[in-house]
Image (cartoon, rainbow, N blue to C red; front, side, top):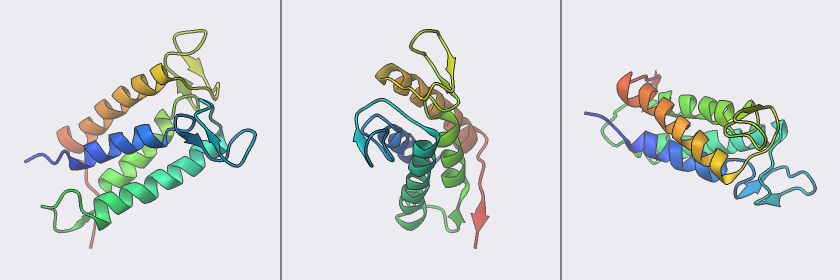
Length: 138
């Protein structure tokens, strides 16, 4: 039986916490910038920490997947790593502003967030559903 709960939570948090879409913490000009479609290494780090904290709350404390008896850190860890690696503009932006792919430009856009979200969904589905990767504690 597949558990799509962690995939759904991970994808929704990926979209909501992508730096520059709703907010960027720290911002370029202020402590917090809203909807500026910018990012930075510091922003990705702060957003990744927020992402990890929230995904742990949803998957471990709230137990979005109720049938597991042991705490499964796999979805939280995998999703957090993917969040950093796939944050638009940090390592790459697909599509870029001037080329199909731009590397390390610290920019994002609505289309880039959509494309990176689709890539995120595909990769996390492979790890959590197809491969069934788990990291148990307890």
